[in-house]
Amino acid sequence: KVIMNGYSKARSSFIFLILILMYVIILITFFGIQIIQHQFFTDKAQRQYHVERIIYPSRGKILDKTDKPLAINAECTAAFILPKQVKDMKAIESFLAEHYPESLKRLQNTGQHFIFIKRRLSDEEINIIEQSGIKDIKLLKERCRFYPVESMGSLVGVTDIDNKGLLGIEASYNDALAGKPTHCMIEKDARSNRFYFNKEVQKAGSHGQTIKLTIDSELQYLVDEQLEEIVSKFKAEEGGVI
View 1 (cartoon, rainbow, N blue to C red):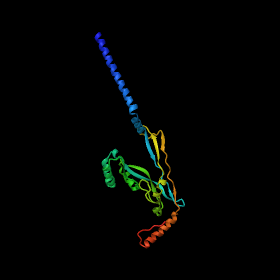
View 2 (cartoon, rainbow, N blue to C red):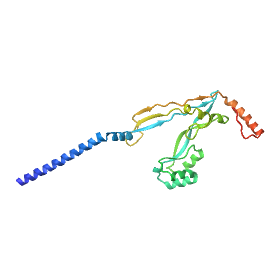
View 3 (spheres, rainbow, N blue to C red):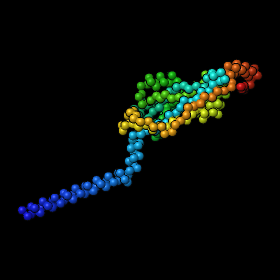
View 4 (cartoon, one colour):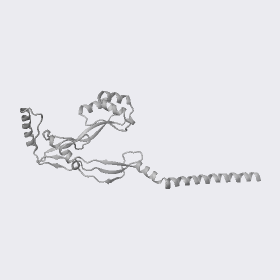
């Protein structure tokens, strides 16, 4: 009986020490998580439940003296792929080799997660992509510029593929026309579903301003026609008139 009691006490003491050790380990773990690694897990939670979204405003219009639009916003379509998520790479490579060889080179020589195949697609190009049935090719709607008065092109200018002014009024007043983007922090669930519980504006933006010119586009059109005749008559290389 004495031997049994001694064995029981030793076993009880051993179990007690194991429990104490486990309790200490748990305390040390909690201390590490909540104190030492507090900032790390806080930042991780922020990344998991919050996503920053940048909302770009519509580019401002350009008008003539009679309020006729010279540059307006339109909707264009772009095609892109997510290389890391492609399910049928052979189909993608075959399609790009036939229709977009330059995009195929970019795909083969880059490790990016996002690649544009082409932007500002024509209706025919959109139809070809849709008819291919390749689900790995995604279509995206984005803003672009449309210029209804061709004779005003040299004065109004153009924007690049990212809607930034390159020439003319588009370039000279790019900041005013482009406006400023709004930066928002949006809450979502841990599975990244589109359930937004809260939207907090971190940096307010501003709308693109409308630029009104003192030029009459109809008069400019008539003068432009006269210019074409004179350039042709004197066999000049080029001409310009405002």
